Image (cartoon, rainbow, N blue to C red; front, side, top):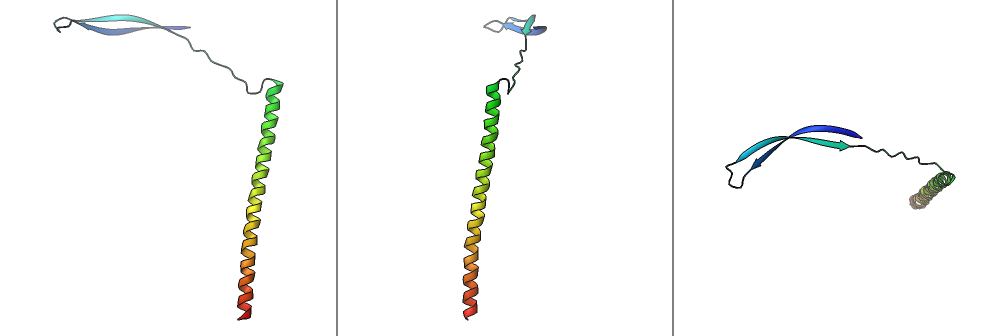
Length: 93
C-alpha cells in the first residue's frame, strides 16, 4: 500500500462575496495496485480446449480451401465451354 501527501489550495468565500479566505490543506492519499496473474492453460481441461481450438482452426482452413477450389473449378468450367463454342463458330465461317 502506497501513501502520498499533497498540498491542495482551497478557497472559501461568503455568500455576498466580501469574505475570501484561501487555505492550504494537506491531503493524504492512500492507494494500492493489485495485479492479476492469468495463465491461459493451467489445467488439463484448458489443454483439451487448446487442442479443440487447433482442430477447429484446421477444419475451417480446409473448408475454406475446398470452397476456393470449387470456385476455381467452376470458373474454369464456365470459361472453357465459351472458348470452345467461339472456336466452333469461327471454324464454320
